[in-house]
Image (cartoon, rainbow, N blue to C red; front, side, top):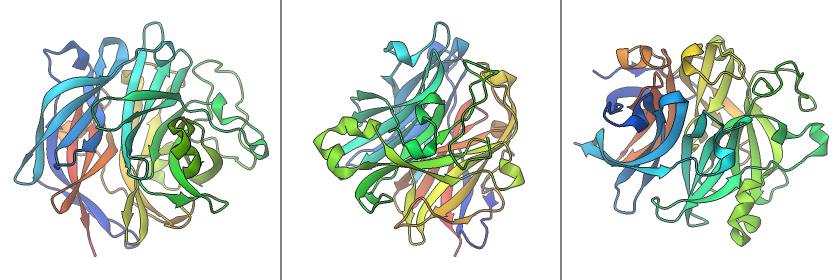
Amino acid sequence: MSTTIAATATIPYALERVGTVMEPDPADPHQAEGVLNPATVQDADGTVHLFPRLVAEQNVSRIGRARVVVTDGVPSGVGELEIALEAERGWEHGTDHGGVEDPRITHLKDLGVHVMSYVAFGPLGPKPALAVSADGRTWRRLGPIQFEYDDTLDTDLNLFPNKDVVFFPEIVPDPEGRPSLALLHRPMWDFGFVRPSERPPLPAGVTDERASIWISYVPVDAAVQDLAALTRPGAHRFVAGPAFEWEALKIGAGPAPLRVPEGWLVLHHGVTGSLPGGSFVPQAFSVRYVVGAMLLDADDPSRVLARTSEPLLAPETADETAGTVANVVFPTAIERIGDEYFVFYGAADTRISVARLVRTL
């Protein structure tokens, strides 16, 4: 049964549940602790491929690739699963934990590549990294993201764990007006993975320690000359932090921003509850993840035009309220199939579900 969660008047979009498209296969040890938080790639012929995070025992993750089965225009399942990326570099895993997690993929048509951001859960905790592909099948690592140092921030963003990195699909102006490729990210002002008693040096002007959404930029000219420039973003700006009760703990970006008539539509997750600092054990979390949305200015994507005051989607079904981490809906990909947009999301850190994105006005 489809359930519609209404949007606010200022953001005319809603989500309608469609169903679950992927459950963990008990016969596959790579999926022993769940399949979740996928990226997507659409081939030239319209075939959509899902890139799920596959979690083995001890929370060791790989990124898979599976064809999305579409029935009557609606995603209904997956087939032909293979491994797209796994932890093969020393910085991508710890001694007995980690791996490559939570991919987001954006097609950068101006560069002719798909760029995958992912979390490398290495010896010092989560760090963002990039890989690129011309065909969506074979991926080449560009390496960890190294945020350009900005002395006016009075800190170094590379000191901190960072997640939820996702690129905009089109060229946008940076703060100086230069044509750029922009990415959203979510630095965490927390040293719990390595030095729990250390007080993190917050950026200048930041007084709220809760994890929030930031934006950084890469000049297009630099990326055209060398794709590795994508790993060296600069001109960092705060975009949005927690604003409502349902996102009181933290927020983070979801799928690649979607260009809509009002600007850039960004689906994000809002979190309440508690997360033990530095914990590698998802079952230790006591949290609730919901889906919200914001609109960013088309000409200045660091500027928020509107936000939903209530979630578009919250954990309600059995698939969303029971699993490795209960009460989680975590959006990570949007694809247009036919004339409709579908949002793929992780449910309870165990399975992958899909919702239809609909315009309400």
